[in-house]
Every structure is written in C-alpha cells, then in structure tokens.
Amino acid sequence: MDGLDKYKKAWDKQPEEVNKVSKEDIYKMSRSKSSSIVKWIFIIGILEFFLPFSAFFFWDFDQLYKSYKEFGMENFVMYSQIIMYPILLIFIFFFYKNYKNIKTTDSTSELMSKILKTRKTVKYYILTNLGYACVLFLVAIISTVQSHPEFEGTKLVFFIIISIIVCTLLIGIIWLIYQLLYGILLKKLNKNYRNLKQLEK
Image (tube, one colour):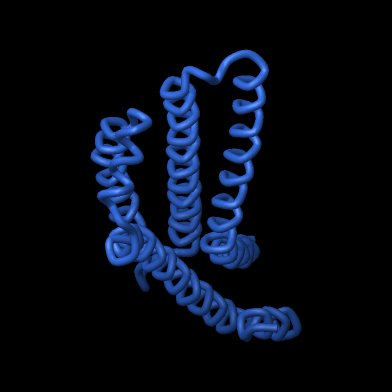
C-alpha cells in the first residue's frame, strides 16, 4: 500500500471538518505523482529516440545499406526515416509539454484533463510506431518477393505466410515492450485519475 492509499483510508475515517485538510493532502500527492509519471514518460521517449543512434557503435551500416540496396529498399528506408524522425520529435515535444503543463495551481478538473491528454499522447505515439513497423515489414516482404523471381507458386505462398507470421510475432514483441515501458506508467496515471475523480465527487 502506497502513501496515497493510506491517506485515502485515513480520510474516509475522519470527521468532515478534518476531511477538508486530508482531501487537499491527497490532491497534492496525486499531483506530485502524476507529474513524476509524466516526467518519466518524457525521459523514456528521449532515450528511445536516441537509442538507434547508439547502434552506430555496434552495427556495420555499410553492410546494412548494401542489404537495403540489394532488396531495393534503400530509398524507402531513407525517406521514411526523414519523415519519422520529425514526427517522433514532435511526440517528445508533447511529452515535455505535458510534463511542464502540470502546475501547482491546477484545479482537480484541470489535472484530470491533463492526465487524459497525456494518456492520448502516449496512445498515439505507440500506434504511430507500430504502424511504421507494419509498413516497414510489408515493404520488406514486397521487396524480397520482387528481388527473387524464383519465388512463385507454392514457394511464394509459403514465403508470404511465413513472413506474415514472423512479422506478426515481431509486432507483438514490440507491442509488449511498449506495454512494459509505458503501460506500467499509464496504469499508475490511471490510478491517480481515479483518485482525483473520487475527490471530485
């Protein structure tokens, strides 16, 4: 049981005149925890954005580019990244803005509104990344088929089915990683939202 739950139980057992003070304490703790959670969402977003750049120390990008070129994907990879990186930067900006917008002067309803806004931002961020992964896998499958004319008939059908299964599993793994990174934080944020909703009543 965390400190906020203890405050709530104590608040329910106290007389009405004392409840007014405890209600303010619960609100302050909810606001503080919400601000901390949104800050961690922002930090994880930044780390996730810069993580691919660290791959320069481990991967042979010349070889990787040759592989893209072999399958005719070099233009797609280049242009899609030109589009995706600004979009990810915009999401990180919104994460930062959501964090900075939580102020000590916020009313309960204002804080609840900002929690909902943060949840929507994270949801759209995850959907955008999963959507890009789906498009990337689809282009990879099409490019592989086009660059291997020997794929035809039963062999082609078998390759497509296996590729779809593998891509679905990879998308599932990516989704699970996002659930681990952001899902836990969003659950805590949802809990704060419910606490604030009770205070409103």
